[in-house]
Amino acid sequence: MSELVTGEAVALQLQPARLPSRALALLLDLVVVLVVYVVVSVVLVLSTASLDDAARTAVSIATFLLVLVGGPIAVETLSHGRSLGKTACGLRVVRDDGGPIRFRHALVRGALGLVEILLTFGVVACVASLVSARGRRLGDVFAGTLVVRERVPVARGGFVPPPPPWLAGRFQELDLSAVPDGLWLAIRQYLGRMSQLDPQVGWAMAGRLAGELAERTGVPVPPGVPPAAYLAAVVQERQVREARRMFGGGSVVGGSVVGGPVVGGAGVGGGFSPAPPSGPAVPGDGAGAGGPSVGVEGVERGGGAGQSTGFVPPA
Image (cartoon, rainbow, N blue to C red; front, side, top):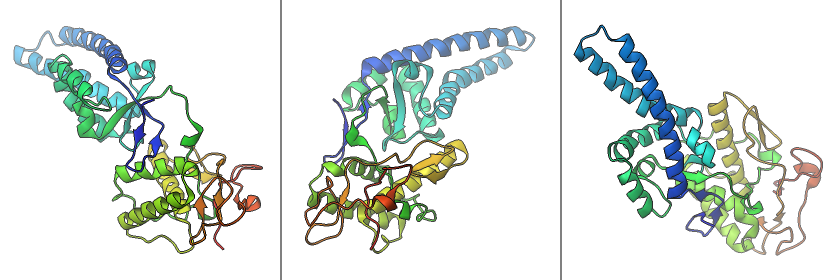
């Protein structure tokens, strides 16, 4: 299975789409766009018959740009990376960190697609996709995007845990604009794999990622908050903001966004043990190095009976 992997060897369960599936999706999209272009052109030719040659040429150029370039850009922006062909082939365009694309991503992909797909009959796009380790064409490279497969089995290890209830809404004022996509990707991959890591290694990785995130935001990690819980809370805050931007509202209830997509979940299989001998709580499998597992079930229920976030509240 092809996966995205960070430098910490933590895998993200996203499969980059390869050239055959992308070519089929592109072919379907081109058929639809060309049919629309022909229909619109015929209508415009009939309606502009009384105009002079210069005016009709200008209308033809505008139609070409609006339908063949502007159309795909609008579709990808409104559908968050799913065109008709990509939907049929089970593909989707996402950012490098796995999040949904925005207008600027679709604009760069569409503008470069005019050159590497339409003007060169797809030769440049095919060569770039074959050379790239993740099958990206030039538009994806410059836009910071990736085409992935959506119809793949979801591994349980890829679950990103919601933060504990006592951290809900605590980072609403945090400025996240300076955090790069690469750091978000590393944090999400760590959270999805923290129960599989050695406790000491996981604790050190969480501390380093929390330090980098705090440096980017300009606000230190709150005292008494475990680094992994801090990372989960900030990631959820970012997802809530994405949901509000995309769907126009939403609030966090039990690890989910009401009025938007689910950003947390019901619970985490792996809990947090109290601590290794020389540090605070670390991600583990429910049995820590320094003592028994800490459930705190009565405090940590987020969405229903028996649902636990797996994080330890502050002392």
